[in-house]
Image 1 (cartoon, rainbow, N blue to C red):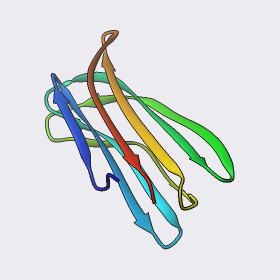
Image 2: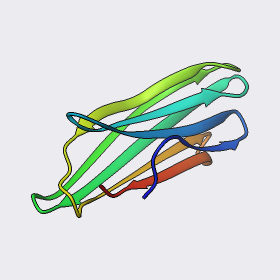
Image 3: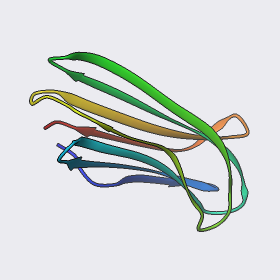
Length: 108
């Protein structure tokens, strides 16, 4: 089981995923942190599998980053049954190349 932030750093941006249990379910947040200036496109993909079935969610957007900036790419709260699995991946692209990625898995 993995909880808390997961980060990967490369070039002009870092990718960060936060998965936190809450009374309403599991809060998921994907952020891009600027390390220098430039435009990046970030995509957060969430796959949730439990006794209720499988759900796939994707959120993406382009952002202009500067050193120290933090941009939330996506944020949601999902319910998940015991025995289920939640997988999250955040990919950051710049000029057609992946420059940062973060991945995290949560199992209640």
